[in-house]
Image 1 (cartoon, rainbow, N blue to C red):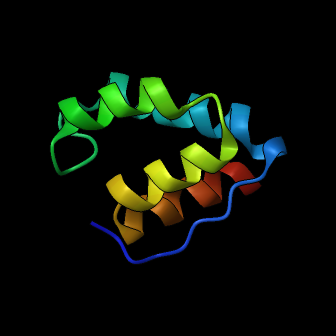
Image 2 (image 1 turned 30 degrees about the vertical axis):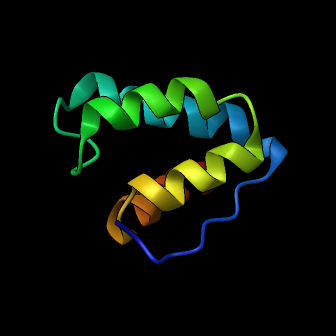
Length: 74
């Protein structure tokens, strides 16, 4: 999916989880590859910043990572 390194912090975790949940709710195709599996894994991994970093690196492409980082920094 992506080779981009994402580096969420503990402070980013609530906002990142909220952003990802909004994307799932708004777009049935999000993320692009296997959205159903990605959503199931997100539910398991959203409680830990380390796990969420792994999830993002696995499921989000570079553009999706950039959009999420822009949202977190705004």
